[in-house]
Image (tube, rainbow, N blue to C red; front, side, top):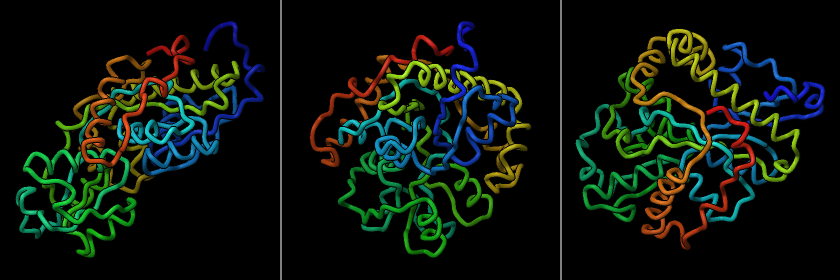
Length: 303
């Protein structure tokens, strides 16, 4: 926080922050970085597209998502601004099938029911994986499902495969209920974005509080990257996944989390994602991605 900024100037600021389970609302207290000189109200979400919708509705002020929700945000003209970027892992993103499935490649899923989480990385990498074997969404029965719905559908056998992400993958694989058909590790860029509520960005106190919050989160990532045993111990009871599975997953991450200002390269990478959805006629017109990005917090970020 800038030296000229006094805590009393921020005492009236409330940041409404979107957090995935086991992320911000868990990591900041665990690293001793939750002594905010402003109020923070956390709300829990399980997908970036829902966070973007919440910001657009003026229900949340800060939240994180990948390039894929960004494509739909820009295309819809949503009231959201990207103020920072996060480099992160692309592990634990995959299409999984029941353990007893006869499918050995995507060709085997032609005409089959595949669940996916709409407007997320799962939506994107499913399209890319199908394209690699000469298929499109028209060659399967795509079933848009939320996280809990997808889990239930895979377990019940009502879908033949599921494009998903997160700790549900090692949990299902560890239980012997599913296996990974194809990982998205080398499909996704690892670029994630911090979105902010543009209604509040003109307020200097909000900008200072938001930047301070993001700098704290960046520091939390750095501290826990150096101590993944602590990271696993802290989040295991929160996400209700055995500690050994969480630790194994954390150690397998191919890139550490790193908070930073966004760059032109981030926009170019996101544009490639937009173009994929345009080719599939899921997004109709090419949006002006750059208009979604804001430099309002850049001078205050330590990344």
